[in-house]
Image 1 (cartoon, rainbow, N blue to C red):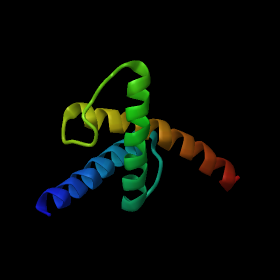
Image 2: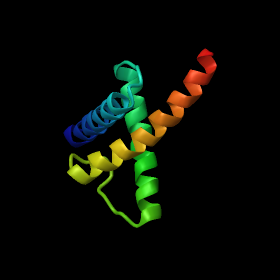
Image 3: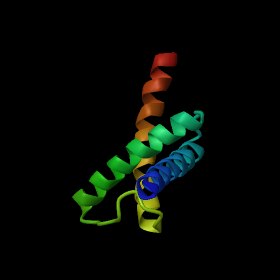
Image 4: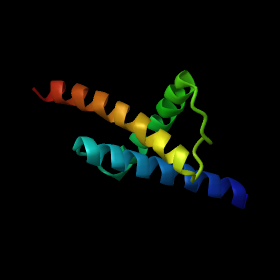
Length: 90
């Protein structure tokens, strides 16, 4: 039970960190929930991009590679979301 709770907390923490960093770099405004969602989805995108490039990282662990992969994916995702949201606002 404690192991699965820890996994969920790590999953959310890595997602929040990756989403926050991506939104900070791209200057996309979003709250905590938005950052977590962008970061978690970005982790999947980053892992997919890593596989396509032949880069292997531990998935959603507290390793530097995992966080960098999640941030890279979150950057791609936040950029695309920023484009979509800016077009809707006009």
